[in-house]
Image 1: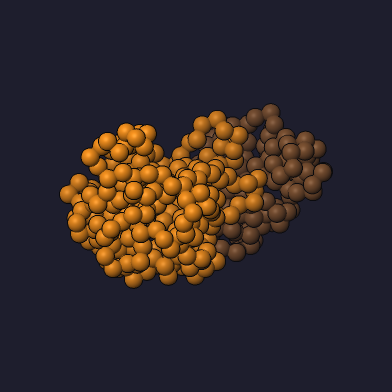
Image 2: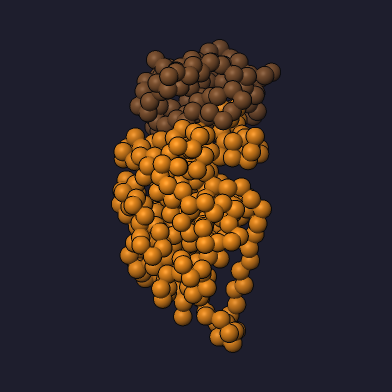
Length: 272
Length: 132
């Protein structure tokens, strides 16, 4: 079985005996978050599919993307069911890859012949099952977003581009809600009708194609999110997905599993 | 369309001294939860100290074994399909488990379920849930 569908062992942690025998995998843990969101808020598979559709529209312009086919909502909901309610096209690719960031002092940055991008705000959080008070619909982004926006002194409506970690379509939907781009429960409507597609949508996201289409280096999905956000701010994204005069961007990473324990980190970046 | 989910071979859980009473009770067909004498909250997975108030005055209580499905997912891409779930016990805590002896296509969030015990490979039995 592939990484996403094999039981995932987190080692000798005290909670593991109460989880591992039940065969938690990456995909069925995120699937339970999606199933609960559908139950509480009436979210549909078609709404989740729009997230993949938007990513595919961006990936077609990235010659390095693993999957460059533009897909439709029908393609996504018609792809094989992996773990209800997540279809194959709700899941990210699995790839090798990596990235690097060079962070320098402001006086050095100003001597470089590149647009300078600076960090305006940050947030970090660790989310657990809270002793049995399980709430799969509130991710760590609910805390990291508040912290990062407060430090940056800006609002979600000020953000021109967002890199959102996208192991699965549901990961994006929950993160957008928790960061405050829309109300809790309204994510399905927010992502629909191409609203995340650069050039037409209100919030262009993952213009490299993201984890859903471009690449997903195991456990390093956050790095590529910061890389594409910096490209947008420098005006170095592909011309067909570049956000005009992009000055303020957000990057968000999620690590671990939304179904058990995860870490969250948010960066708000500005071009000087 | 129906897909009947039966029992599958399950690996044995690792038993630590702190949680041995839980597994000993499971071997007798009883589901235990921990309750804190100081703040009154139940919790799961079981710990020596209450995760809510830090008190070490926690006690094992026998749970009713009745609960409600908080969420679930049918893992169709497994050699033997199974149903991953979180079940909210009537005592309060939500625990990870599997749903067994059920039609996968008829399982719903909010459905009432009752505990069953599933044998493991060389270890204590595991609490799983079936439609009540």
